[in-house]
Image (cartoon, rainbow, N blue to C red):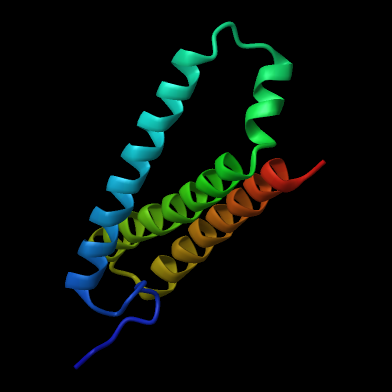
Length: 115
């Protein structure tokens, strides 16, 4: 059996399930964000700062960043393995995608937890 070292779980069914669970979390996070946004009008810099300094919102946002990383990686891994047949090119593209996703995760954490 051939296993892919770039797959998230190494199992197509598990990858499918992870992508569905992350999609549900991202939908719930988006809904939560719009509820908070709707209740706290008008929005100013101080309002945004206060919201992102609360621990519960920092944690939910950090989880949203992780789930976004996993969700995007599974989707892009599927597309690259389906459409890029050249192994070297596919691994290069996947490496670049992973670099961009990890860079976004680090930048997001710096924004959430930074001072």
